[in-house]
Amino acid sequence: MSEKAQQTQNVLANLGTVLPDLESLYKDIHSHPELSMQENRTAGIAADRLRATGYDVTTGVGKTGVVGVMHNGDGPTIMLRADMDALPVREATGLPYASNATADENGKSVPVMHACGHDMHVTWLIGTATLFAQKRGAWRGTLMAVFQPAEETGEGAQAMIDDGLFKRFSKPEVILGQHVMVGSSGVVSYRSGVVTSAGDSFQIRMFGRGAHGSMPQSSIDPVVMAASTVLRLQTIVSREVAPTDAVVVTVGSLQAGTKENVIPDEAIIKLNLRTFDEDVRKHVLAAIERIVNAEAEASRSPKKPEITPLDRYYFVKNDPDATKRVADAFRSYFPADRVRETQPTTASEDFGCFGSGWQVPSVFWFVGGTDPDTYAKAKQSGTIADIPTNHNPRFAPVIHPTLETGIEALVVASQAWLTT
Ligand SMILES: [Zn+2]
Ligand SMILES: [Zn+2]
Image (cartoon, rainbow, N blue to C red; front, side, top):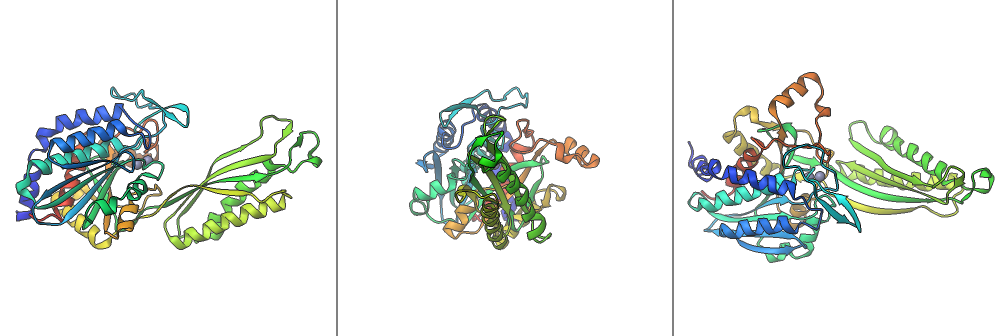
């Protein structure tokens, strides 16, 4: 066994000992989910845990973000990132540690659930930070553990950057992050290059003229205008984009009117777009604007539609050299059937902000969270799409071996940079 592999085993030697505590921590965080930018309890737990194991801790970075730094002799600085927020979803997993939590969202009480597995991410990073702190003889360098708020709203990474993350902390050599997804638990999947899509959301307000439902000649009907727009928008993917370029255009919300015999004044469309290439993205954005304006004009709209951006996620693009380093480290640690190369996912992430903003190579990979038997059977019967995905009220990663695999992956990947 190489010196590096030996030291990685040393860092992981206490994993079995800390696992029961981490399992209760995971269940505790799962049953106390917090919405984006409200992650006060979760951030407090992360900060306490980091302090207790000897990290220098800065809290309140980008509102609720936490940064823990441990200097441990000469060597590279590496940044590890976990996101902390949950979603306004009513949990339907039936798990004994399911969430009953509610929270305030824009003045309205909503159910809250860790439906994207960020509770797992927080536990992974706490576990990893703890193991490194317990075995300081097995590595040299500086560890920077970043607990990020508000990934789900696309604001958290940027909020930490706007709050001086790049100025207040020294620049790392690499930034590493991971996400739990549908996939066989115990398996890690990586990919070089673009790994998650760019996401853009818009609200489109289309204007008509209201009238009595019996007198359409006096109206400019925004319902027909919006319906026609929604259909035409679907031709962007089918008629304007090359079949080899993947794009998603989803209209997730279409609202107009209150009553069957009243033609309303306006209609509101909410639209979400996913792309994997900047040129394709620009083309689709231009096509959306062109179609929306042309449909309004075709309907004699009295006013140009208003197109308002709602949120934006950049691509997550894995640095090829850094990805190779992570993949090689995974392959030398995990058995061959537990490391896979994967396709890009249409999900989006704000993890990419850190690397692109700081000009630091970054790598983001996936850890399976589905019971291996369930996954194997679903694969055999062609029903993988039926397994509840992230954001589904029944999304329920199995704790083992998902918990230990994520910690092993983070330690192994970190050790590929740290001096041993
Ligand atoms: Zn999510
Ligand atoms: Zn997520």
